[in-house]
Image (cartoon, rainbow, N blue to C red; front, side):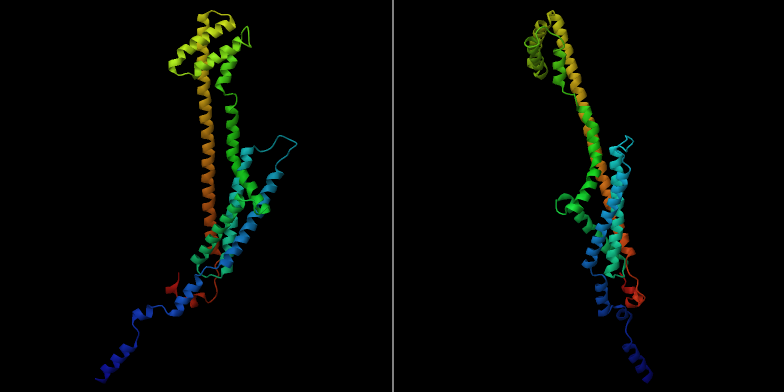
Length: 308
């Protein structure tokens, strides 16, 4: 009987498995503390990231300027220089994001890898917003001017595309081509040729209902201006109208090609910017994970069942 009582007392005094697994208040407080955000460390990481970005940017500008030789024509093309500048700027941002994330996690004193990584990611995000602010405003002319210069180099891809498309659209005015064709010959350039030009303009700009009358007037004007028979003038009117339509078609084709070139450049720049930002975010994340501290008694302070 006494043995049964002793066993009953021992059973009731022993904590159950559920109670043993229940975290204590001190463990909860410790978990909250080690996962609390440290804005001071994040701001320090932002400062370091900006400084590294500026240093690498100036290094890239110096290397790029050293490759240029104004005295000779053996220099990189503008499009090549812009692409290389964009790649260097993206790499600089990735390196700066890693350094900023590492510093933020290290100075926060966090021992959890995920918490340190989140500090690094937050540092990258704040740095990116600050850079965009400096680029889009006139505040901070020294730092902002540096970033605007690199942004202009990145935007040189679209500018190069516009420069390629610009010459294709020159001398593509169909009415000017038509006027030059009409004024090719004539007995009275000041009067009869002007009348013929105006008549041909009405031919190509009139609707179908008035086109026949406009052709007849243009043929009569050409016949008087060039001293040729009316049937021959009508034939020349048809030829000029056909040349005008060909010029219009060529101008439309060139405009379409220019628009395609510009849209391709914009799409390439946007996708490249997205990829650079994504790589920068990854660099900040891994930089934060690399920067977490590992104290000697970290495992003793936080039991394995409470790790985050």
